[in-house]
Length: 106
Length: 119
Image (cartoon, rainbow over all chains, first blue to last red; front, top):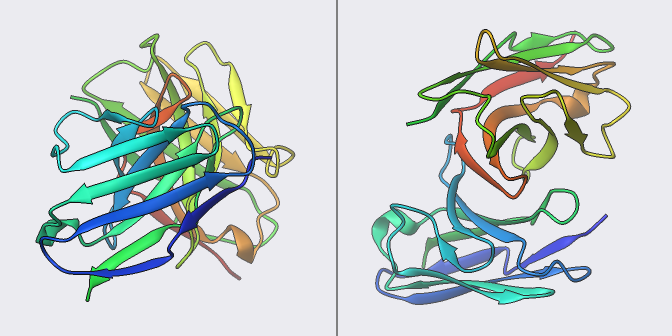
């Protein structure tokens, strides 16, 4: 099965920062990569699907890029509500999730 | 707007079968664009896909759980269900149901229901 490796696992940041989270697949998955945001005690929320498409209602400060094995999620101008844990997920051919990146206050 | 709600026992005995149901409102589970999935999250850990079902009964399971998992759908009740047999403490997790759009991305999600496996 395809392994998804996220880095970093923890990312201290400040409001207004531009941050980047990386997700690497153990083999090529094309563009079948999605990103989710999860806050404590809540269900994950879809942010980005098929690598770069912004889900409806998601602010434009979130951008996704990449293909093959290397993908990134960038938040430009971190807002207070963005402190959360972020997960990548691939769906080719079976579903697996990355280990998560916790974005917390520096 | 699609909404999902999980229901089922919060405590299951070791070696027993875990049974959960997801009720879907705001749309039909017979929607051709959607599969319907289960994802779980052990305490403090990442997410793990359990499996997904299409309204016609076609299923896809996580290979690591395949021998113990069964997902079914009841279109008359607009629900789908998860059964996980021979549970152990390692199956303790919050279980989420979610729409699995085109077998690609999960949206929307239910709020999740915690299940503890313990005697």
